[in-house]
Length: 133
Image 1 (cartoon, rainbow, N blue to C red):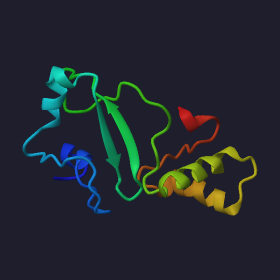
Image 2 (tube, rainbow, N blue to C red):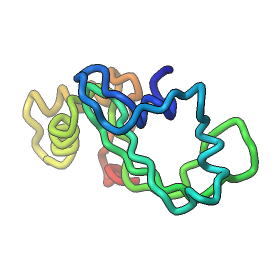
Image 3 (spheres, rainbow, N blue to C red):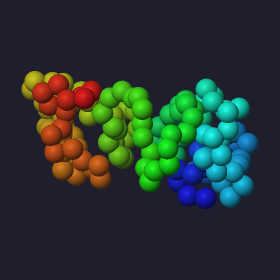
C-alpha cells in the first residue's frame, strides 16, 4: 500500500500512529470501483497528502470519465503547493515573500528556493500576480 493509494488516504496515519477512519486494504477495493458506483456519486473522499505536512484535501466524487492513463482535475483554486515548504505556515511565509516589494534576506532565500531548489520548483515564482494562476 503506497502513498496516494485509496487505502492510505482513508486508513491509518502511520507517521503519527493515529486511527483515522476504518482502514481499507487497497488490494480489496480499488478507487475505480468507488468512482463507478452510483451509490457514491456526490460523496466526498477526505485525503491527507504528505503525512508530515498534513495537507488535507476533500475530493467530490462526480463519477468516472472515459478511461485514460491520467487523472484530470475538473476544478481547483490556486497554485500547487511547494513540496516540503513547511506545512501551512511555511506556505503562507512563501506567499508573503512574493507579496512584499522589499523582501528581507530570508524572503529572498525563500523565493530562490521555490524558483530553483524545491522538488516541484517554479522558475517563474509568484511574481507579477502569478500566486493564484
